[in-house]
Image (cartoon, rainbow, N blue to C red; front, side):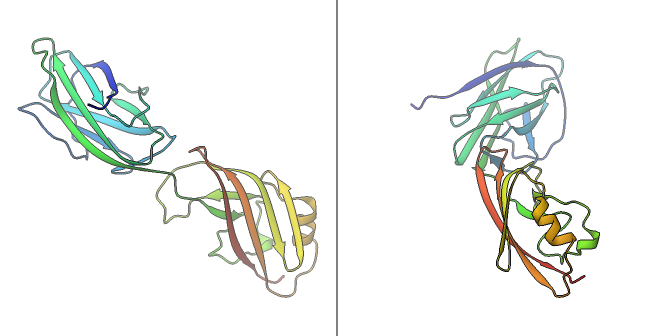
Length: 223
């Protein structure tokens, strides 16, 4: 039999209706709610919230069984936990509970999750994604960002380690996210009577501990 990882905690009564796929035993049940449905991400605190029914008035012992979890940590809220894993693939999370009157473990929830790395973010040139034409006169943020566009419903913070910009035959490089003096001078002090494109590549540090290189092409309106 494979080794299993057990996590045991004490919790008190709560009756909550949350979205999940519970497996209910007898008259006792529970549900697991997550931020992103059945998706977990490696090296991140994957938040889950638990809700229970049929246990009111009894102290209970809660046991998690998860072979591919590295750890399950209780959050600041009594019924919030964070699941950590480094393994890409599928993950099964089972929750068992018992009471002082009945020490038999009852399976109250069984859920499967797909575990993957975060999707790569998009390059943001100041206030602009590449789908937008840049107006240099309205660009107040003279720095690069790595962010998800509105079409990706995820929350993650990425930091820019370094960048490279090519405009025609000119190449600019820098560390961190801020534009260099040379790039600022070219963009904001020189006259650009014709439309031109900017090729940008960023090296970014990600919350899932993977360093990524992301590139995109932007088009700039003439002055």
